[in-house]
Image (cartoon, rainbow, N blue to C red; front, side, top):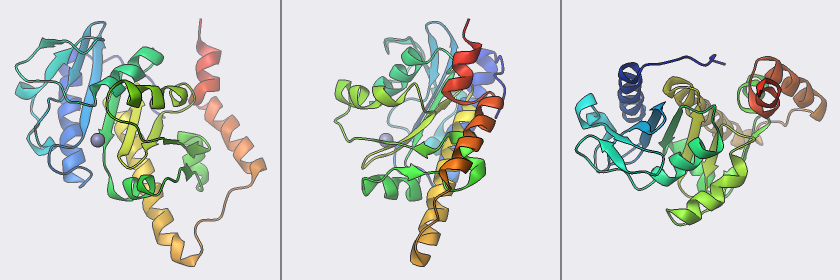
Length: 227
Ligand SMILES: [Zn+2]
């Protein structure tokens, strides 16, 4: 529920580094997994580079790409999942950051082909009624096509047999959305031996979605503030 903040490129670079290292510290990535981008200005999207542990992300190995994915700053190469990040920016002019990782509980759910119904009231306000599952597709244009239908209504998705992709007005907010999805998936896993979390009633979800819009979150709130 963070209000949009205007961040300088210098500050954004620091947030991208912080978020990337946090992904590693939390155990949400292995090997070279995971990536973070933040849009500083038109034609300037700060990004983590490919083939690098998120533990080692630093300001000196960040790159800058434009909206077509061409490197316009830095000495390293872009990561293979960049097309999905660029699709988010193209579809949502309110988005300034995208975070991707493979957090174990949420990714486990994504490997079963299940989506995540939000079963805690606070999560409905923060994320909406559910976190959808984007069907599995090969990297590149087909992954972008699979993601496209979910961009307008959601701020975080499960990627089937893959992981989680979250976006928001700044890197911290996108990270918090990913964190909340992993937290919900973990609680869900803990509740499964007892029959799984109970579903919230439709009436309560409707009330919570009104609260979500009132908090300035979600597609209804965005439509209301569009000029
Ligand atoms: Zn991935």
